[in-house]
Amino acid sequence: MRHRALSLKILSSVLIFGAWEVAGRVPVSFAFPTFLESMAALWVLTIEGTIFTAYAETLKPLVVGVLISAFIGIGLGIWIGLSRKFEWFISPIFIVMQSAPLAALIPLLIMVYGIGLTSKVFVVCIMAMPVIVLNTGGAVRNTSVSIVEMGESFLGTRRDIIMKIILPAASPIIFVGLRLGVSAGFIGAILSELKITPTGVGDIITYSRSIADYPSMYAAIFSIILLAVLFLNLLERIEVMLFKGINKGFVSD
Amino acid sequence: MNNQTTSTNAVSVRNVFKNYDDVEALHDLSLDFPKGELTSLLGPSGCGKTTLLKIIAGLLPATSGEVIVNGKTVTGPGPDRAFVFQDFALLPWASVLRNVAFGLELRGVPKSEREAIAEKYIADVGLSGFEQKVPHELSGGMRQRVGLARALSVNAEVLLMDEPFSAVDEQTRRKFQEDLLNLVKHENKTFLFVTHSIEEAVYVSDQIALLLPRPSRVSEIIRPSGFRHKPIDSIRRDSEYLDIVDKIWESLRTYVE
Image 1: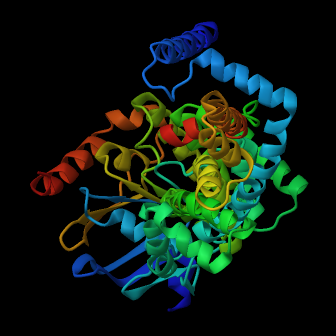
Image 2: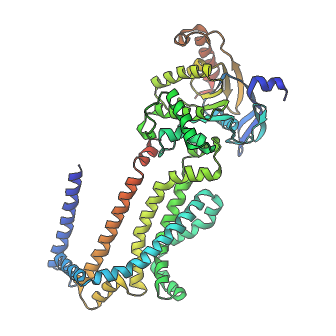
């Protein structure tokens, strides 16, 4: 079964990259390089080390933003889940944040926070935080009523009930929110480099496009997608490992 | 409250009303639960039997009226009562051992002490060897045994059981009912037992409170007397048992759609 899943993955990659190669050779557009050209460009970027310095730059706002979003987001989410009043007060902000067209807000952010790291961290946070907050809030709010009643009837303090019942029960969904938040954070990091100041991977993309070095541009785009996919896969593995059997337990309970 | 009532009744419900917004769930309900006996709350669905049990547990406030447990008015959950939940209410991430010891854990009993107590009750309910399993590895019946062991291990005088056997299969339920009779006989506790099964109520109860809905009130209190001390295998063939089952059905049938 596992073996077959792996071969299907390989098969789908071969099909997609094959289609890319064919489309590049036709070519569908002058600005669309083939898969092999893009991989060659990626190889060059790697050998030269450009890609590593670029990622060192791109990952800065991403890591800082995701960490801030995770801590504040989970904190606010727990509060929202526990208190109806606080939910009415705060969750509209995140619902608006989630649906607002971020690119339109960027000029505003630049005006307030300049073109440095702060603005970029903000963009990552705006992307990552709502999904973390709303998932956490929902998970906490939807803790099974009966296990909370159980805690009350066996004389648990409010603190015990939150720490020993609600948070462990909510943690699988909180983790899902975290994973979605990270993937939104990736989008935010690249967006900020394209819209605020071109640094890191965004710089490679912008610069290659301006000198018509399309293979390098596609190589950069490909690398960021690859990194995001690998990282999210890793988070998913951790999730499965941490919460082994729990989800199943919830379903049948 | 005079002393005589407190010494014979473990739980007394006095003129309890409960409204949900403008719906009246319980109307002027009074009922006594004798110490050391099993009392069933029986009635059609929507008759407020679970509501009453949760008010006694202190999980729900009554709109008016009072509940007295061992001479003290209930204001919230207390150490004198333990609850067995219809859906078991186990922590899905915790082992059987931790689940059974969880009531003691919330009371701040040290780990080694509470685990020793939990081990004893795990053995009592027949789950030895399953201490390290998590709930989803157990059958429904075994999960409810965990719930029962948890309630027993806090050593409360009153056990509140909310349709505890409704989520387990018929054969397991019969076994549970027999075990419950033994438990009532050997543990010196008072049992409050919510059920919608007439046969189950008559089989296990010292006293049956028949609740009728809209608004909920106690319509009748039945005390089976003849077959309670006979061997448990003969109860279901006893003529008094059969008569009571028929009589209860006569009272209830008009309330069932």
